[in-house]
Image (tube, helix red, strand yellow):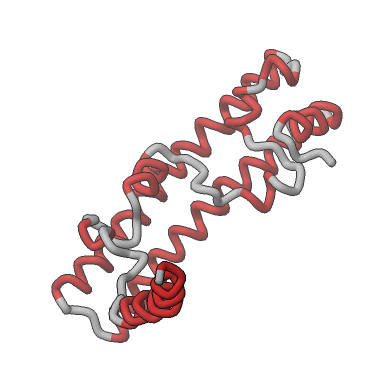
Length: 172
């Protein structure tokens, strides 16, 4: 009798699970509808507002070109000279200032897009225009961060770049 019950359960449980699955249409976005700007998380907003990299400079970082903020954090290990430290700080200050300004534009663009959908006021033309503005800001942000990596190549010596990549775990 016990083995019959086990066998019956083994047959029925998959069907019950399948039946439940047929009625489940849950989205991976559940909870995000509560965001002020649906397309940006709180972490995204914080990163943009402080001029952070937001992962936009991976092309440089992962191809061996150091980022100024990381260089500054590793200044002792890299043996930065006073001139190199000063140059790195200038690059960071310019990058961060430009990135904060452009990040604000991107956030404002996303907010305008959000408002358009919330109000139902978008048409094809206004949708394209808002997206164009957002993507221009995103492109500008990426350029700002990637350019800072390029600039660092003129500040660091070859052995410092090699050490940076080893410390960051990129060496093979």
